[in-house]
Length: 414
Image (cartoon, rainbow, N blue to C red; front, side, top):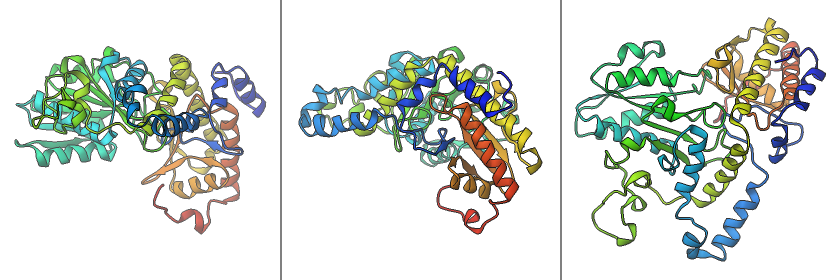
């Protein structure tokens, strides 16, 4: 990346950006710098009209006929095929359905059935809490003794033993933005007969993923971060074809039945990915997510990654060179290839500083105990924004404007 010494240098990068045209496809509030796409993506401009069509036309006029006429019934597979293109899967290996929490539970339960002589569900300390909570929940319901086991991230490989049923890890860590080597870890787990579940919540749409290349068994992620599906957007679930019919769903929903309109008293799972549908699709959320997916699929995968790396690298560099005196310690990898589309810093006053930035129109977020997070979405973030955000951060630190009571009060959402 060319050296950026001035705001004009950053503007020149924006003018040469092959993805610049996509920014206008999003609702971007004036005066805002939004570096929180790793938590909630921005609203595509086409989404309100698409949701209006579903509400007024498909629901309002089509009513029950829209299950067929508007292909409501096919939405989980249709959107799944689009997600599959983003994560290197075949179109019949991904389904969009339910929430990320439920899909984690489904994947864990499938692994327990497939590897039915093993008892340990392995993950790392500091993983996203829901992943771990679902392990604990499954253990309380299992007919045999299932033990969730958390070890330090650096000790994972040492605990890949023959009694481990499944390994559940995130590719891009939600707090630190570090990216795991999916292929190497999956190979080592498979050598011990361990099934591997990859959480792609902070990767899909920002970090290139190829689940076939890494030979993943299961993968999942949410639709509201880099996929820009909006708050509450449904999750996606990938199951390698070799495993799709090896287990019986423990959350057997009506639409996952082999013949749902036979209305049988006994559950018979559908073949393939349809068996993993638990609930009826939330069509308004599905419609919003499909708009976000279509936008992402217009952009070149490698261009998205290259810009993501350039944005995060520039932000790291500018904070260190222009704000280095204020004690910001990088909590994310400095190696661009080991970092997702996110920059994290440790600072003892991180919460107050983030609140002061938000008050000045720079949106990031905070994670306990001292992590300031900034997520970069290559479709709409710019290099000039990076320059301006660091300008504002420098002013906040120089003037100590963060040191106000209102910035230290903890809200319900951080």
